[in-house]
Image (cartoon, rainbow, N blue to C red; front, side, top):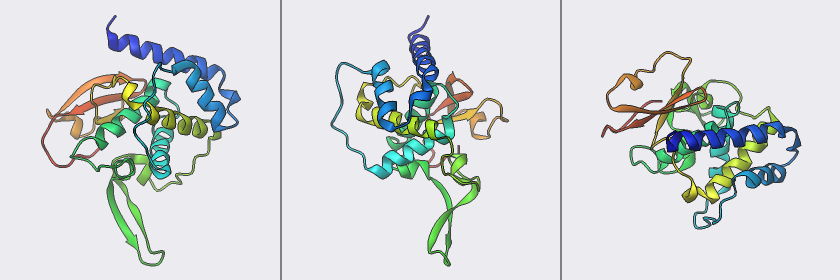
Length: 204
């Protein structure tokens, strides 16, 4: 069994444990405690500081992209997001990555809005409300995001540097057919890819 398989299996087991007890998350503190019990490392990374807005953007991405995925699936979304932040071909902030795409300006409301179906993460520009409706899933997404960001240097990137992914049940996206993208791993319903091109832009 490969190291990658062992890691994914371990994370899936952790998800199974936490899912069984999912009903006990009335607060973020409770979710954090449960995550900590099963994933607490020996050392902590406390050198990186993220604003509330950045944490919120990442938690929203986890919630909308992977709330029905396993723990490894949720972390996979986090890793892809953070891999993009670290890649000069994408915006340099979490919110910039999550909200990347075409926008239009409403003079009446003096506000920018994402153009429908023209963004990197489909939930952000699908025309539907982004407000989390599943309270438990939202609390868990927030807790997991905060936990990861405080200890990001301790996580192994089991996506192998993936910057893109798509659901296995949709038609193969045009970008995935390019030789510039290498499929790295499958986690739950998502297929992950590493973008090795020197192009300046890419669409999810």
